[in-house]
Amino acid sequence: RQRVFSGIQPSGNLTIGNYLGALKNWVAIQDDYENYFCVVDLHVLTVPQDPKVLRQKIREAAAIYFASGIDPEKSVVFRQSRVSEHAELAWLLNCIAKVGELSRMTQFKDKAQKGGADSASGGLFDYPVLQAADVLLYNAHLVPVGEDQRQHLELMRTLARRFNNLYGETFVVPEIFVPKSGARVMALDDPTSKMSKSSSAPGSYVAILDDPDTVRRKIRRAKTDSGSEITASPDKPAITNLLDVYAAATGRPVSEIEARYEGKGYGDFKKDLGEVVVETLAPIRERALELLDDPKELDDLLESGAERARKVARPTLRYAWTRMGLD
Ligand code: AQP
Image (cartoon, rainbow, N blue to C red):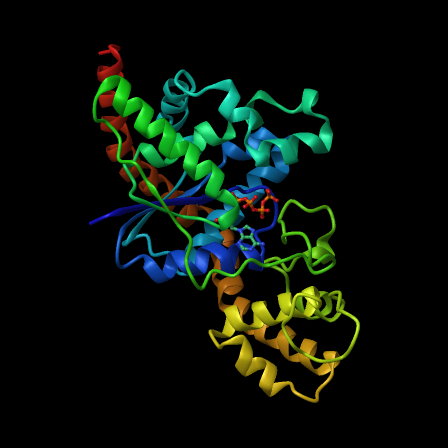
């Protein structure tokens, strides 16, 4: 069976964007592949984190994976930092990656710009190399991620091919896998930027663990466009985004939802959308909170995932060492 690798950074409160754009799709494909789903807690260190908060966010992310329907019998779920081979392979790949190609990564340029490029961490610069190590360690064929990750995936493929050319066939060259139904959810307060869990404005996102009243309030306050029709169009980015969320959460086409709300106002539509999102998140939130209440169950699940991950990661790293002359 083909292997799949993907991950989410515990860089804040996981959002409905992470659910509709990533987790929901992972669950949908988990029967068809051998899956590795990682809480990428080394990647998250590339920008400053408060250790106390981070500890909690890592647990929440893991609980949300399981609560969303990732089945530990079918998928290997683990923390990146608990499988040291990720950092070790990243070093080997660092030594064949070029400064020029890393400098061209737009995510680095965007994120570095926020605090001034000179004060960005070396880790942020190196982010896509660690990401390449994540995937190549498992010889994953497919990497389900959002469109925004395409450039990193290309670099990953370049590094795999370069390694294979230099040292002999070692790594599978992975493919990006952008699910057709994967929604790209935009911020509630600014439909031109992506909904982001590390945003400092909680009103810009719905967190998977937000309580129902908070969800309803955030959606009620979401930005809307001028006019009053509930239709998706480029000059109505805010309503389009809300329609996309409605469609992704219910699995219904946007056109059907537009038809249902013909002649109705933004207020009615947002009220119903609030309920749709509350209903979508309720079972996930409930199960996640249960898991968070039982630290031992969560720790055991993650540790057994890490053990299974190491069984694949260790031989791949050893093989790469041997290829490079480090045996
Ligand atoms: N708004 C979104 N809509 C759809 N998919 C999304 N993803 C993230 N935001 C949205 C998908 O979630 C996965 C994990 O992403 P990540 O944790 O590696 O970081 P990210 O893509 O940078 O997500 P955030 O929430 O915006 O994190 P921060 O704020 O830390 O940068 C990916 O598959 C992504 O496509």
